[in-house]
Length: 55
Image (cartoon, rainbow, N blue to C red; front, side, top):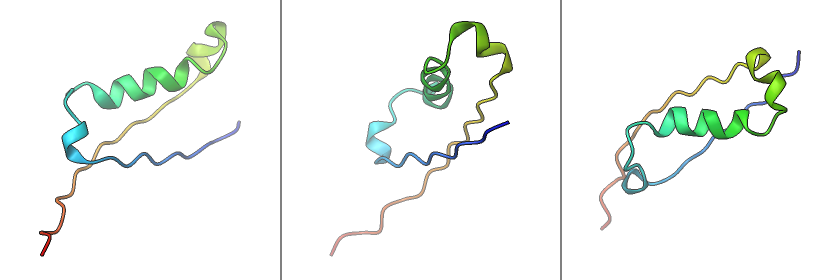
């Protein structure tokens, strides 16, 4: 078994789709042979933090 950890950060204004975490997981699965998809586990957890006020 091999595990790869990837962290994706982006501004909250870029998150316009509530299904974004699953969409990212689907994109990761597409990197592998289709016949292997049943053996691939992709976990996506989305957390948001507010930006500190500029000033």
